[in-house]
Length: 321
Image (tube, rainbow, N blue to C red):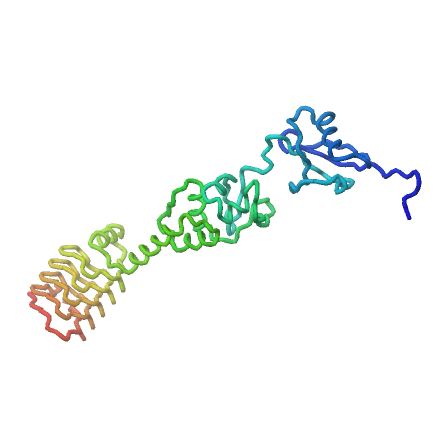
């Protein structure tokens, strides 16, 4: 049974239609109840937006395509898509762990097209919905800014650059999380190199750099540091804390070690001939196989060197003057 009252005509639907680039404020008009989609698009083109390129389709405010005019409700606000339009904004702001980063859509999609970011922000065939937005309309990403920044630089330029102090392991985790496969192997190599550097002994050059960068009123601390095998001959290392440091096989001929703290340091097979050892603290140091021929221990002020509890299962040579 037809429940529609005879002679009743449904009211016109009042809608607002805008064009993102050329009519952002929009224009309001009504749709007859019996109008088809083809007729509506034709009327929009001819009577309302005649200055625009050919109108292809109508979309909702969130850019979903309207495929059936029956879905248009009274009070809807719609967007027209014209031939040649770029529906999506090119500039995108990301809120990465509280830090705002602005980039372009093409930067996020061109370098690594199969990545999570590319799939989120692609203009077409985007298989992942973008993340939620904050109150400023920036896309929220719960990631660490300093590591994501290196990943973003790669997506922009195609080159992987890590600023000093940036752990490659952190960037590696970002690349894995976002599926940027193009740099995974390179980051794995950098992580391995970083781990090797962390365990490698310091060189003479690195020790000199540390001395130069430390003021005279500051005490340099090398406690527990590995400096094994380095040539430290004739350097002024006075007043440095070498407690528990590994100085095995170091060449320290003529080196000034006065007032150094060498307690429990590994000095096995080290050569300290003619070294300045005034008021040195060497308690429980390992001097197995070490040579200290001609070492100078006398302090004009009378402070004695402390060499209690020296460790050595093999002879070491101590001839001081």
